[in-house]
Image (cartoon, rainbow, N blue to C red; front, side):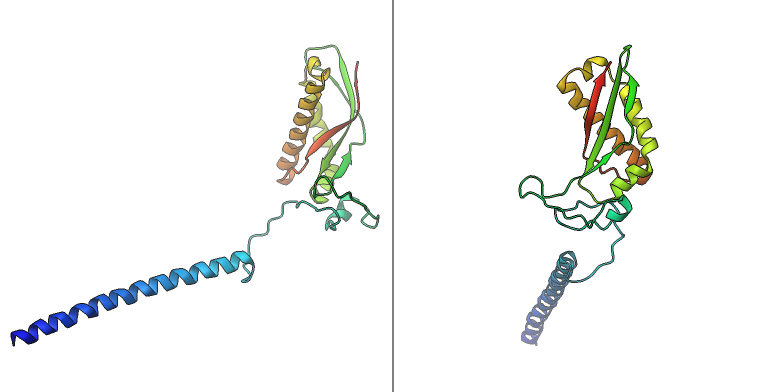
Length: 192
């Protein structure tokens, strides 16, 4: 009888380790399956509904802008892009009127005409047109806070362009939730 008890104990151990191996195998299979499903969702094989990302998209050269009509751009015009430079097209917004402002702590005035560029879809141009009054006000505030010494040097003008760009993007972000302006350009620039 002692021998049968020893055999029963030896037979019980393999059952426990076999059960443990089966449980471990099931966990590994579940993890692999979950990882595979995640990879297929990220790869677009399995469609997943995401919250709509409504931010303006970069538009590649030659691609149609789905928002060109609201921006007032003529999509029918044939565009010929060069092969070099950026892979994205650049669209411009030209402010209708010149900007005239006193300079900080100076009797001098600055008068300039400005344009802004974006490589994003037509919503940015539409928003600039829609909120031109608010943007003009913000830009005039930046100009009034600019010392005369800054507008007399090339480096100072480059810094001013950055500040003007940031001001436009701040206004658009406040009003529409997204900026999108890449640069500001001077069409004319006079200090009196």
